[in-house]
Image 1 (cartoon, helix red, strand yellow):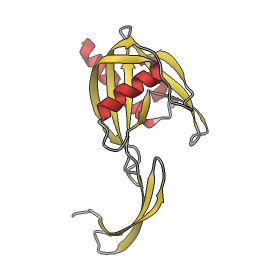
Image 2: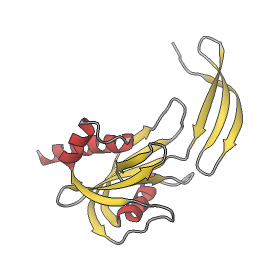
Image 3: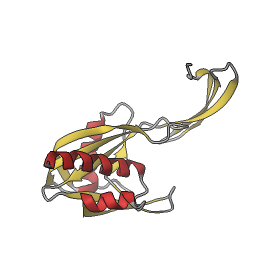
Image 4: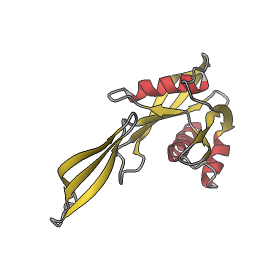
Length: 181
């Protein structure tokens, strides 16, 4: 059976700086009509940066939606039409002060596909060189280094609450562990 929902109409509800919200009327697979509220977002990029000692650069920043400090991989919002890799390179330098020689794409993931179109691209960065941090205006964060094993344990113990960070840690550990064998 085809479970695709077909859009009948779409109405803009909110047009903000970062997100846009629209209400769609859709036809369900059984022919009934339903409403959907969707968030349009240009997407984001996260970078798990591992140095030559096997340490991972992480950032801690206050997240208003979670009402707490969050330990995360460096990340940022794409501009509409921007290349995800270029965004990742920019965000890594801005937030940590490091540029990378090598980027490995770990995948693209929907943050919350039930109502949001945001796609997050995640990269593993290696071959790091310090070039200087350039935080955006109004951006406040701390940079720290952790072993990948420590971060893996934090994910498994539910101590890391950011989904993109958890995915990045799990995928990077699997790839790097495989390379070591």
